[in-house]
Length: 59
Length: 358
Image (cartoon, rainbow over the protein chains, first blue to last red):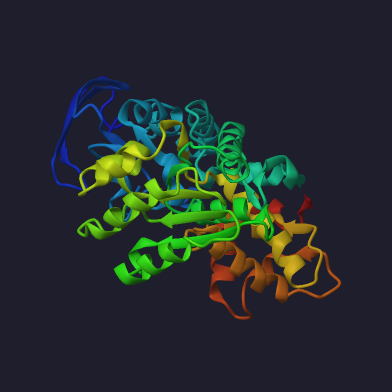
């Protein structure tokens, strides 16, 4: 997202993959302006040898 | 990128992969990682030409955040030449790489051992919260082994035991001739039944001050933390009473195995497997070490030991090395699959060996 919209404020509304409850993030470049809930984490599980493929389910 | 409401949500996700646990990070930290040129410059015309340089900046950003995922740690193995197992030994064959973890667990051992050696009226009940696969049973067994035949070691695994069986085990301890180290494993299991705690409570009161000594170690892995497990225990009938029988200084945490811990465990298990099969294993090919340290199928020290035994048996009797190919049965497609996956970046791990020093 960061590199698709440089210099723009972005709002991301999604759901937790575990429980389905909502997650909301507002960001401007690398600055996170709002995040709900504040405990939100990101997780990536791609093997490093495959990270550049970029189109797999977990990238 | 997958988003979750908290770290606990990631860990209970059905597709969670423990070997990639270093890739759980707060969104703020991920934003820093995604601000390096690898991502920021994706729309630039010369991106592909500079991709390799950008990759190193990405690695560095992860290292700066203290998050070297297992997938990125082939340099750790590449630079590893010699491992002196005794430097990392907590007790017996139980090893940990991180010095803070190592010393905290050594303190726990000393506390448990002193209960077996010293007389007194104190309560020698202990509670361990251990991350899944961190080898809690092996840890307690290793304490017992240091006494050879001087003490009796008994394990009660709550989920596998009926009320009658547990009663019989506890009664058998009344006429003990030697000190006993009792492990009540999965103390947080059988959530719906009340008899395990009802049976343990009077037993824990009876053994105070008795000779020969009986030290009871209760261990579990639920609740994501020691506090989480205690909350689950408290919620059960007699749970609060049971916890009140455990002095607070007798509570310990066994953290999950890090990548470095897994490397140590693998080397230690190869050394043990060699001894068990009459071979002295001193060298392990780095590519094999890398494969095992990344393999999610080999989660526990016991699984690693079984795997190591089979690999050692495939080698020549007078060879002190374990080669990558010996990890696999002839024709196992896993051998080729892993090699194809990592050959472009980890080729220097082939024909290069780590020396194991006892």
